[in-house]
Length: 237
View 1 (cartoon, rainbow, N blue to C red):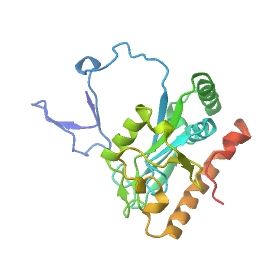
View 2 (tube, rainbow, N blue to C red):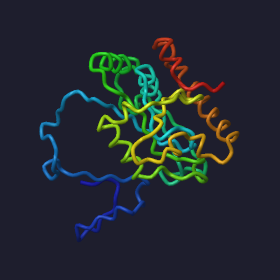
View 3 (tube, helix red, strand yellow):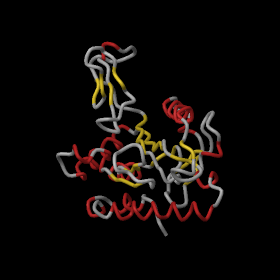
């Protein structure tokens, strides 16, 4: 099955590179065509929960471990960034976007309901929560480099193997995220975003700009969560 892509009417050929209809295209396989799957579609409770973001400002770490309060904060925030080439009518500058619970259009209930459910699951099942950033490093979009798929894959493997949970971590001074000091084959110098920028002052300016956007966005949720959750987010000052 495919969506939003052009196919030749007389042959089964599909042109996945064709953006005539939309910038975003999708494809899927029937589950019976894949190996190593659970046909029932059900599994046990996870030991690790990974939230994904794509920070185009180049200021968030490739991987960070979240406290339960931070997990709720970032779940409610649902931060990522839009860049040129991913959607129509995008300019050259990246745009921060916040989609509550990483799926705002699909939420039938108030966000606080889902945040409370997440908190209860964390308390009951003791899963580790991680924020994995597949965005840019060493500068914003247009200057820095995209975090490589190989490095992201190594991060995911380190998380799922349980090895990363025991690695010492340091809190980021602006975002408060706990950054592991090492992560398998991932170069340690890219784990701390500030070390990848040529100009530290420019990094701090950009990081605080994004932190302000987090703070502004979270004003909506502050009355519905604890002070501990509110305090666990980025600090612009």
